[in-house]
Image (cartoon, rainbow, N blue to C red):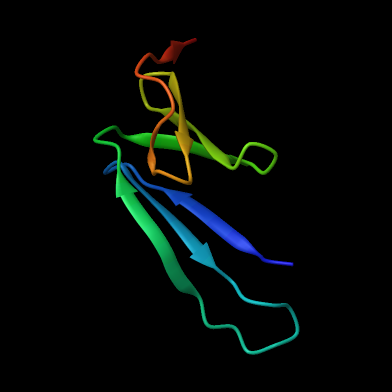
Length: 79
């Protein structure tokens, strides 16, 4: 079993961090990082589809493939 942290920042960067196994020394290492050029407010991991769902400051939601680190569609959903 793997344990990850997904972070998003207001400068538009998203990082994926590996926490290693519980009850062992913890050395957090960055697995991947990419830039969205949007001020991110929310990030959610969908394990069934291996994707990140990201919400930006303008209320737009985007879906990112973790295989390609690219948006899964060019259109945003606006709420």
